[in-house]
Image 1 (cartoon, rainbow, N blue to C red):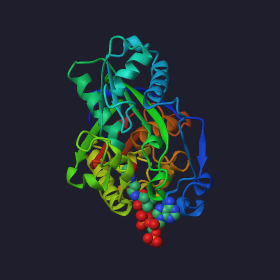
Image 2 (cartoon, helix red, strand yellow):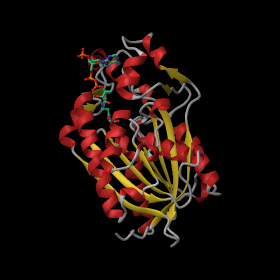
Image 3 (cartoon, rainbow, N blue to C red):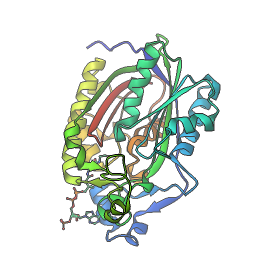
Image 4 (cartoon, rainbow, N blue to C red):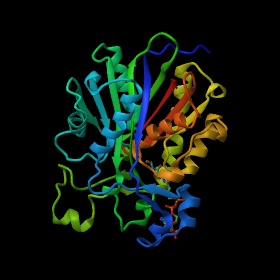
Length: 331
Ligand code: UT7
């Protein structure tokens, strides 16, 4: 196989997680659950929870500042801010604009997009497209989620799963040294939207007393159905991204999968043919941070020396929509 030539590259990454750790033991005092169930079914031991003054925007700005600093860039150098979130600070205007203001990125365009857990990977492909089209030289891709604000803290089937955090990457044009985004793959199936959704509180069923009574503004998930779709879709995405990149699973230095459930991660790795010692896992410490999971994991992997300049990394995600996506990147 011949490795494809990248057109855009990841220059740097960054992350932010709130300090507050919430353990499974603490969950036991809120809903009828236990540490053993959560660990054995999901792999999660604890998650981070943002306080009332910490928002999707402030977490994204913090992660973005780290990424910009590592790239040796100033906020004024950013041409475009792309922000993935399922938990925007407000419904209007976009959280990307709030981040633009927080960072003082006075030369940047900014927009949000809503592809849930696949958001960071959709963002990389969008950044690549903008850079390749000559519309931007420096793109800041952000994925930020305050999941604690949209889970139903009385529903044990969802509230134990999620956590808060943000990740960031700076994307610029590739410089011809072979490093960058080798392939991207994006897919969706809106016919299955109601398996993972927030039924009320949008423009279709505006927030009113009935929505509040029914708690339909919170996340609802048909766990086992989503589980099966996630495994199938992530396997397909991994396979397609590898083929499009012109590389084999043996060549992959690190798989960075979406961190929803340890059993989904293991199934994806097994199908892709990547042993677990080449898979990055942090779901035990953060739970599912939706679109922030992959960039936080990637940033930790780099910090821990599990991946670095020249490493071949496969990232693969699945989430509400349904959406799924994968990228092969040479860091
Ligand atoms: O990020 C976007 C994509 N999201 C995902 O990929 C999540 C996919 N789904 C999953 O990860 C899993 O389906 C869950 C972790 C959500 C659930 O695991 P499961 O093995 O599919 O469990 P289940 O929903 O089939 O429930 C098994 C049992 C049920 O009890 P009965 O009916 O067997 O008596 C549940 O009521 O476990 C019960 N249960 C719990 N027990 C203790 C459900 N939640 C809990 C809980 N604590 N928190």
